[in-house]
Image (cartoon, rainbow, N blue to C red):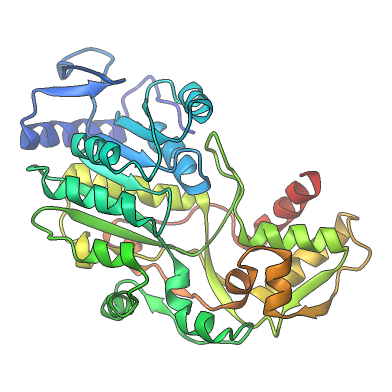
Length: 382
């Protein structure tokens, strides 16, 4: 990503000032660096910037978590990062990719370990799973007893908005519903509260703001090649491409008029970084009930996505006909790809007003339409 310039930039100066404020607020005499406890480097030290905050992240080898880890570790600011990784082989891969972070071997079911690591952190990014209750409860227990300012950034998913369609197995139908995370946040909170199966989402919105400041990221269709050391592939769009190439023909699920919002994984990681920066800066008004984020860079009907993929596959000489002539049912979709009826057949359109307004976040990567040629090419080479 961005290399530090020889001349100190305005961004570096800002991060330096934020660190000074944060350090004074924390009044902490020591910081962990690569697993070794030692005093913070003097702020007068030449050529070095002390850690601004301790960050604990899960999902380091996953698609979303891996890219977020890459972006966070590449930021101009110096964060003291610890990453939960399952197994020695994956741990070695992550450590090789990010030699300056501390790798913690364990999994999401190791509640005691997660509690211990979360307790050391100022900011927790739980990006490994959207509804893993054991790990979320461990984080909540630890942070509620931290006795210091702590922040929790949690990944969720836009199937939250498709519960009725999933229950009735009503797929491919058009909907005009849009969930605005700023103007319509009360409605989103109501959807979460009325969905008892969304255990982690409910846990997040019920945290006491005086103890834990939270942000819930409702992930839409995510696309683009990840930059992490593990999985770099998304699911929804690549799977449509894979099935199209496998069957040598384009297809759509039912009428294909349903739509999801979408976001490039790099833009999603940038939102994670914006939230980390907001936490370090002590920014108010962007957490808990005001901390629901629905990132997006537009929306697209799945029928249109299928058509675009088929046309591009034909253009690349991978299938004989670029038109979509085949219609499949939800059951047929599930036979082709796990949970495809839900991931290709429901509606989840959201508007990211909060991050744009409160955090000055703006998507800057290519659109989903522009990414289609790359999606098809990568799947053809897999």
